[in-house]
Amino acid sequence: MNSLKIDQSSVKRSHLVREIVETVILTVVMFFIINQAVQNYDVEGPSMEPGLHTQERIMVDKVSYRFHNPNRGDVIVFTAPPHPTMNYVKRIIAVPGDT
Image (tube, rainbow, N blue to C red; front, side):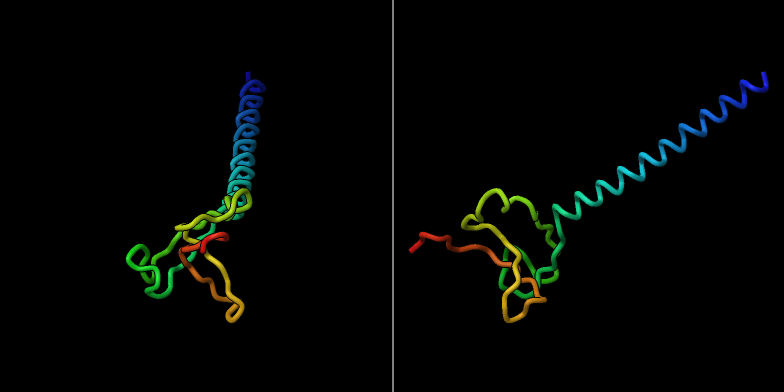
């Protein structure tokens, strides 16, 4: 009878350890996927008003433009050569082929 209780206790402990390991692995994988797919940016300056205001935070999809080109009206984040460490948040007003 005593050995049965010990076996059940070790089985429960084994299941608990497995659940913890699975949770940690899932958390790390989800963090990696989210980190690669989206990113937060701060809007600086009034150029995007009234749609976006200074100091607002936006979440940017980093994956979709790998599959299609940006369209007119899309809000994008980019860096410009004069300030390569600064991110610009702007709306696309023209695409190639517009005159």
